[in-house]
Length: 250
Image (cartoon, rainbow, N blue to C red; front, side):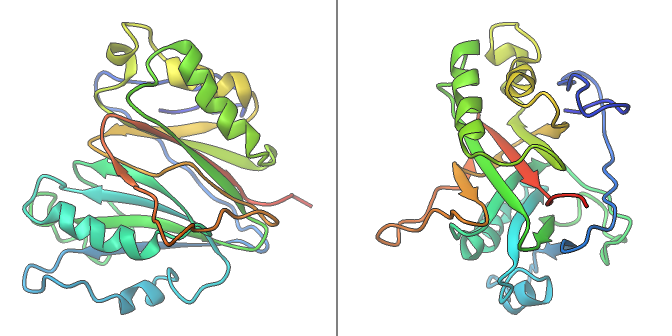
């Protein structure tokens, strides 16, 4: 899923056949910190060392607002359990979690570059910190299967009232959705997003599992847990739409 270069109002495209990719370059933004992280599963230890969260800026960080997570080699034994070990401690209403599961990844900065895609499983991602960041996510479940219900989901995202200037959108969808899910109508979800967010660029991918839920985090409004019930964040055959506002430009 990519918005072509040139203008943020260009029509986003869902590319479902063949290989495709995109790159995002984030400038230095006052008040915003973006950290990368990579947690690989240790075959010798079933328990994840949560002290690594703090090292990655994912714990003891009051300015943490958004975490984009990407699990890789999810078909490997123990991969789903490991993903739960990463996601569950981060599942707080004050943090947006979004992402998906992919076959493999390539990183220019990872300490684990020597590992080939088939050798291990793990989680990579980006952590966005800054008091000025605002974000929201909505989950399009299996019942969202036509233009009307897709647009209703985008209306929920619009109702979060996230500023749309200096904002990017992400779409993490199941490979089982797209034009087959929408009865041969292509670009359905990207078109619905563009209808409600005409000037927000949209990026993402079709993967093998989705991470996210309906959640809003802004400067003056954060949904709080009720009776310590946690949101279900791991899904299949769904789409997670995400908005990340990086603050007003001066």
